[in-house]
Image (cartoon, rainbow, N blue to C red; front, side):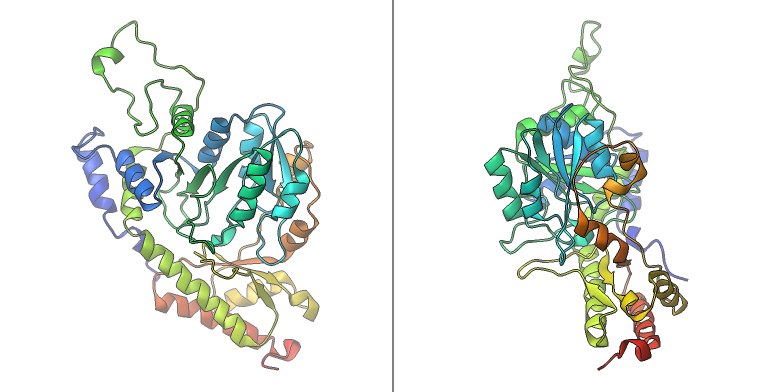
Length: 398
């Protein structure tokens, strides 16, 4: 039986006990949210970090801080989770679907520029599967057209581009998810980081139910008990949402952050093992996501295009055979956002995305959250056996 709790074998229980023992009051070192925010901002060399209850909430907070409003347009990749489109819609704005690149599967800067109109307010580049988008090109476009950029790093932790920039530190705001499958998990949760104090204040207040005394650095509501308990005190200066991260979740997040380098290293080891297995197989049944020269990859998942139809092998047949040989289930890509019924049936958004729609049908995602070499070997053995079972059809090895 696999050990499913290994990811939470650090100081999680210690920090959870601290919260419970304190009765949810802040300790001498501050609240768990404060400690998580401070450590995360230092790790990414940013001035401000703000926790939230999900990576969707953090994107909404960022768009609000940018001033995205009714009638504005926000450019998102078509190949991404629907939540990227939902947060645009939640602002009353219009999602504009940009196509993706054939080799990296990530948003194509050239198509971003084609989709810009006088209504465009922001861009959400999504660093899918653990690989960074071409942020140099995207920021050049944003500066040219005076646009805001929030980097969606839900699947991308500690990744660097060719200029040694860390994902989430290049745009105006970086946004990460702590959902249970991510590199770091609090069960559910998220965090944003920025160097812009005004943006930080807006995001914290918007996600903190509009309390006026929230600051870029501080999420405490009751800074002065005497003021707060005065009948004349007015608490809320903006309309906001309750996107706050519970203290127990923050306690888990703090413990997880202490092991971030370990978690990323484990995923990279699994991702590179898949890559080598495919390379050694001598077949083109799977075509991996390309990592540009100089870039690092954190392999939230190992993404590849399935090319089996060319040999008369169906997507589902290959997946089932891989599972029969002991592999974890292979995951499909989401429908492109423009084809999700919530958007398509309600005519929400616009943009032709031929590449994204074609790649979506062929995408295969392999798990990378294995505990050790023994667990990695199970996946690699299953993939090798799957390739070998098709050797007659695919001329493996020549």
